[in-house]
Image (tube, rainbow, N blue to C red; front, side, top):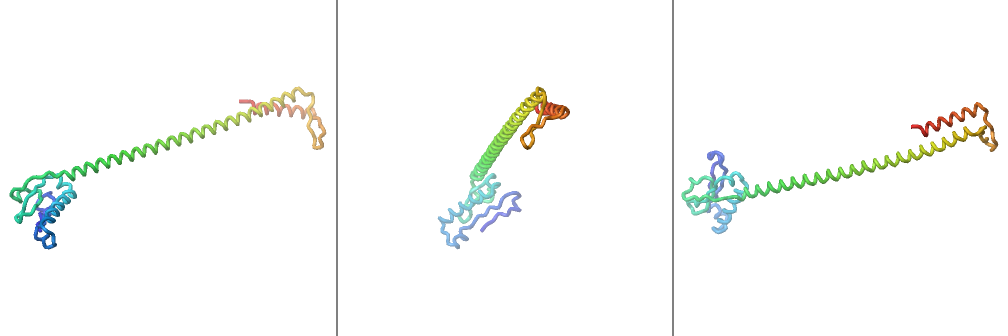
Length: 195
């Protein structure tokens, strides 16, 4: 097993190259080894984004095994390869995050619109209820005004006023009581018909 020391390579990522013999001892044949090594290299490059964004070289070691590194001088005949998987993955993830953010914002806006519509409906409903209550109060006030006005007109035109007793008989009011009843009727007109 060969390992490139990261501390010696200032900012380089550790790239592991497995020897053919170490895997052969594990029972891996040469065909599977090559596929496994290529998969391992691509997997490492996917995980290590900075490695994928740097230059990567493919070479063959002393034993004839493929090796991947970020230092071409380590191997004679190393050829530069282009790895864009991690960058493409990062762009895809970035697009997905942007789309999700836009979807979240749209959902938030829709919720805000729904809330505002609901609040407007509640406000309009409350305003409608207030208008109905106001109209009912105006109707009651008008009915009481009409009743008070008729009573005042009746009290002014009558020569004598009376009230009925519990037995159903009429008891006529004195002049002083009549004046008091007419003054009360005038106050009721002011109360119900006034501004």
